Image (cartoon, rainbow, N blue to C red):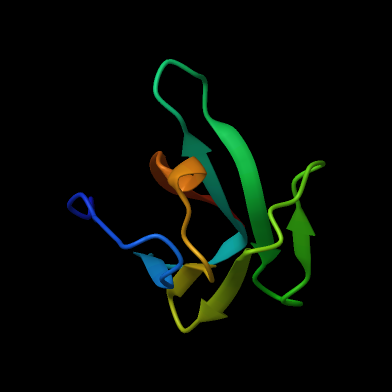
Length: 92
């Protein structure tokens, strides 16, 4: 499901959630800035909870796996975080 636009105060914390059905090998988060192609942020392996970060990680972003939901947590939102965010899963 697509979430509406979110407007936040700089420095605030937010969580973007993605729910899914069935099982997945891994769950991924990407972002896409205006005029650019999507870029990988983080992924988590469902079975082990192992996290893989982008080559240039974003230390204020983390990923959490819950039952059939994967959250992208942004601890201190900045103007540079303005983007369209996507979640994707790799099925088993």
